[in-house]
Amino acid sequence: MKNKFDIFKKAQDLLDEPEVQELLDYCERLEDEIVDFKFEKDNNKQLIMLDMLKEVVKGCNAIEKEQMEHERFGFEAPNYQATISNLKNYILERCRDERIYL
Image 1 (cartoon, rainbow, N blue to C red):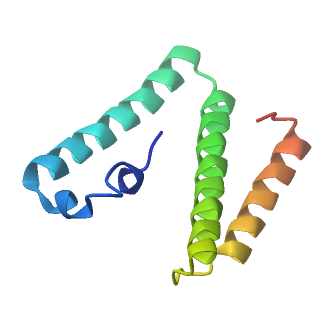
Image 2: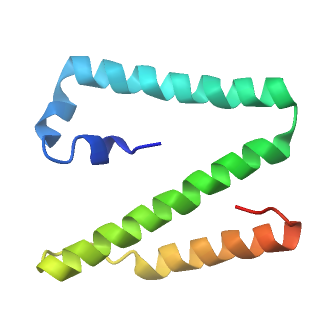
């Protein structure tokens, strides 16, 4: 799933509009319903966990890419590198230990 900041990257001032906020809230509720539906459908927590872990790893990759772009073009960016790398390594290790393949 796309992050709202990725969608509105070129027009972040739109995030302050009430209609956009309402749409983002609606999307967030739908995402929650999808997770609930997957759980009800499969009644398998491992599938939900797998889906969530995929999203976390994908988010970590996106932040790493964003930071590389900031460094490449000389913009000042927060240094999340160590935190992201540690989180990503932990998740991948746990998945390997639990035999969950992403």
